[in-house]
Image (cartoon, one colour):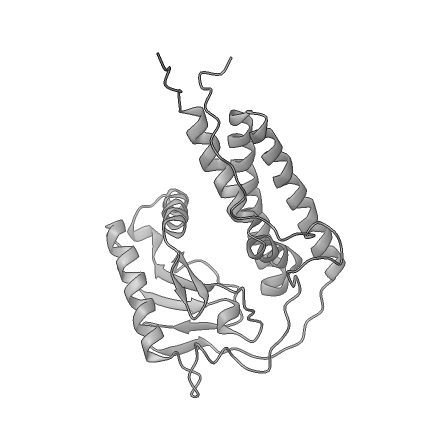
Length: 265
């Protein structure tokens, strides 16, 4: 018998839209459209960040990094991802990268990476900062890590590192959809285990799947870049808020494992 009897709420506040699992019924565009222009809510006519947006992003990055209290200096603060390119959508995040040398923190760069990933996840869960309707997503990037984005803007230096280019690409929508639906089903199975009170299984499975998805996306970026099937699957899961559901499952199952219900007398 488990040492806890209180079952926490697991309402899917971050759930996929109705019909997501059925081919052809998704409200999420899994293959991004190449726009004719950058998002002019963000970018000025000179293709530089609007000053008020640049100021906010710098403050957000510095506030986040200051609280980490790490010895490594910030080498750059960059804006990257689809919002810095022509494949942006209404659901795109603003990917804000703080560039440091991990080795300045500790020689064990894998340890540093894991720590910073947790710090990033905690910050993103605790804050819902939006700029022009787009959520700000922070990531601390190793300066020695290869970058796979097709556009990078230095917010710190107010200049493009890699200029965006409009280009066509080919990708199998069926491949992206099938793989996305596969992961959606896996998350659904974990939800059922949570509903059955199998909290230890839920915690282990959700943690393993989060790591698997992270590695899956990274492998795609390294082999096929921003428009790889793996990266598009990851973005579809994020945009449908399935990744949020997975994070909630890990958090809520841990809380349930560690809780003991008060006995009323």
